Image 1: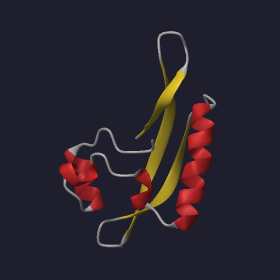
Image 2 (image 1 turned 135 degrees about the vertical axis):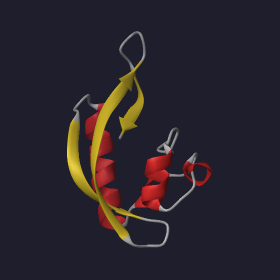
Image 3 (image 1 turned 60 degrees about the horizontal axis):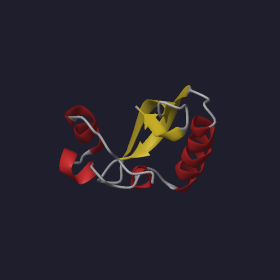
Length: 88
């Protein structure tokens, strides 16, 4: 459902949130409309099993911009079915 399931202290600090604020939040609050389109495209690729890393612009809690390298991989169950994605 494109929500944050895990976050470490450093990422929360980098984005200006607490860990608690980020957990369960939509991943789309961390980007603008252009970034959302790119995220949605990357999500589709991830669910097709295509891994990747890219430099991306994110929006911090205060509205300022932060750039980071984002990588993604699909998560599969024991039978190989797609059950989600991991973005780091």
